Length: 288
Ligand SMILES: NC(=O)c1ccc[n+]([C@@H]2O[C@H](COP(=O)([O-])OP(=O)(O)OC[C@H]3O[C@@H](n4cnc5c(N)ncnc54)[C@H](OP(=O)(O)O)[C@@H]3O)[C@@H](O)[C@H]2O)c1
Image 1 (tube, protein in one colour):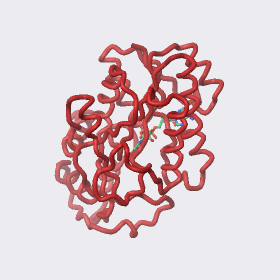
Image 2: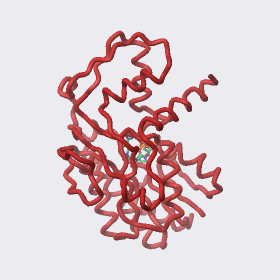
Image 3: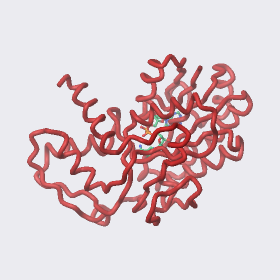
Image 4: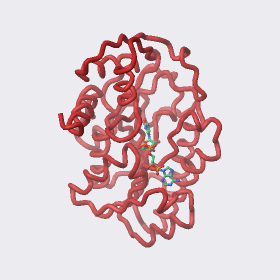
């Protein structure tokens, strides 16, 4: 099976490539300098030339705060480009699997969001990602697969786990937010799920995030407990209002993965197990 993967240098894409190769998928994965997915004509001819069985789109504009000042940039990559991918997929009879986000929700819920919950993004990034979903559904309907995930962390790129490990080594006290609840998701687990979805011809929207929910503060505490470094840092719980940021974040962005669980026949990895797997990868890379 031939996969055309966009976003291979990103946090998620870089976890997919080695796993896909191990499973004997034929992976074609141009980087941004080889193909900019905001180039409608370029996308169409690339897809026509490669003739993939599946387009897997992990490319995105993910700078949530920058997006507030760069609405055209965010919409170009997160809304227009997915539509171009959908059009090219339709023309060539290719399946499309596209990544989206928990930030399509406003965070006012008190229980996990389902795929049917009303969307209402509260920042430009979320608006642009929702527009991307809508564009794909307009072109391909339910034959497209849209996978919403949450708070990714993995061994490649900047993420909360890496930031905490750096700060634990530098700080005596560290303030971490308590009033934002989410499901931190290990990119390695999600990469495996996406490759399973490549083999299952089911379209529609699916939530795919870790099992369980946690605040950033509790997540940081668990990172500190498991990291077994020589840290003397004290964590201080603070409200999000302590750190004003350009983009608002949902206070609660936990998603139900029941639909995915039914499809795959297994429950998601818990956030805690995902964290342990990530920390193991870090140790392995350090040769410890
Ligand atoms: N990170 C999270 O916490 C999170 C949470 C929920 C959902 N998601 C979604 O999950 C997906 C993967 O996220 P991620 O964290 O892996 O993102 P990431 O690390 O920021 O990677 C984004 C990738 O997109 C590529 N890209 C950006 N603009 C492009 C363009 N115009 N043409 C071609 N490629 C382009 C980047 O290439 P360069 O490296 O060359 O710039 C990079 O490879 C995205 O759809 C994101 O919205 C992420």
